[in-house]
Image 1 (cartoon, one colour):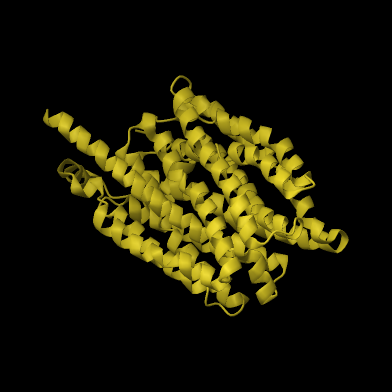
Image 2: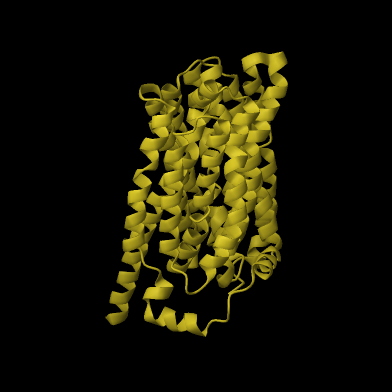
Length: 430
């Protein structure tokens, strides 16, 4: 009876932790993605080029986010670190810096504020992944991490809708302030409510004291990269992230330039379509990974590989559509298919490495995903748009998105290649 009661308490604690971490991740993506819907009015107000838009929305944030992710993950992997308090501190920092974006008077001030957001957000996902992986069994890990990853589409949806409406009715500066400040309050909730099982559970504390010292960063990264499946997973996830972040930024601008929608209209309609599609795809990806991966581990990544290939022709048709309502209808399925990889990708990453390197594994995957994806995706497509603009005018963005759609075959291929190694490597690290 005592064992059953303890088990029930553990399940309840895991559920509370998952819901709070999901809320934190929603705030993470609201603050990260709101700049996409505000990019066009910011560009008009501060007279920015498309390359500067790409730099502001991508590389300025991603460079510091990724570089700091590894040492923060190393700190999170220490047995004495309170991962909830680390997350709370990071949340308070990035929320305050988001509000400061609204005070920027020129490009460089805005760039520095976005760097501050990246510094804060570096302390969120690695400790969150490590915490979740410690609290749920391996057979439920994909679903749990997919649930946490719902913060990506939900946060993106809310960032689009709220940011767009606030930009129309108040202005882009006020939008940053309104969405930034509530995160400081949530940080207090995380600090006082969440508990770290390795510090609050007596048996876990005893195990922690008997553990050898944490691996140095270099050795931990080398241990993670010894897995061939993990390396392929990094390539696939980075390619998917490159296209996802690049397309999100420039699709919002596409609807405003090509279809003459306001930021509020774009945020509302594209936010809802993209957000609902992302939520459905993220949940479905985790469900399919747990369902079919239980019988054959390679099928953990089958849905992302197939889905991304299927998304290519539908996305091209969406960007060719003559009207914005038709474009939005067509873009729904690619949003679903391209979101299938979140849960399976992060779940596989946690199962391919030793337990003491789980935060490092998450940070390593995020390092490449965000440096290549978030850092270079919006910037590359912005530079390409500037190159095509003298010949194509406002239509340059449409042709950039055609190319981005076709490149979806790249992550599809590498997810398939990675899946071939999962039976041999997954959950063999102890």
